[in-house]
Length: 256
Ligand SMILES: C[S@@+](CC[C@H](N)C(=O)[O-])C[C@H]1O[C@@H](n2cnc3c(N)ncnc32)[C@H](O)[C@@H]1O
Image (tube, rainbow, N blue to C red; front, top):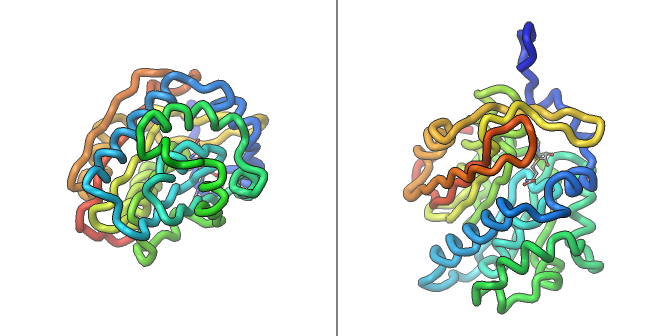
């Protein structure tokens, strides 16, 4: 936080309607970073383990705050009958709709699929056509997920920590995501460690500073199984690494 500032930027204050997905992809994913490729391998292996006894019929997946990142959705493709990409910022919704349209997703995402397809369940999938067939995009607010809609597998990447400066909104974001998962659902959630905010093009976006303890505390009440990977990669100034949480939803239900 800047010296002398007394208020914190809340989620509703940030310029989401100005979010530029192409600049965001340029900044983060166009040239794949080793840390993201490592995350993708961890996702691939974790979900493969979760479904090692078989894939139930009609598994529905959700990626919350999908923004301009397709790899969480790609990591769910072999397991799902349907995948929903939920996103608040209109420019990101338009970006995601282009990615799942008949033209197929941008080649920027091929490097991530290349890591995924090293496992047999992924190798059996033709990702571009599968994306077009089963992935749908919806504009929505994470805070409106009130536990009435529940998914069987879910991801949330750099959202609860990267949408507001307020610790109560971080906690609420995690709770809303976890309450959107059915009992036993495998999930993956990624967080920037100690982020002070980020810039996309000409606009600044807020972040809430979190560390491994804070992430664990926020997730533990909702999880049966939880592993947190501390990836010591700094991708830009203003944060101290990346935390990846992998786990399964327990049966607790908390008010939104
Ligand atoms: C740092 S970006 C992360 C995007 C993407 N998941 C990734 O892994 O790169 C934060 C995302 O959260 C979205 N977001 C912010 N507030 C939201 C809200 N209230 N509900 C849903 N999404 C929100 C933003 O539009 C943006 O796409």
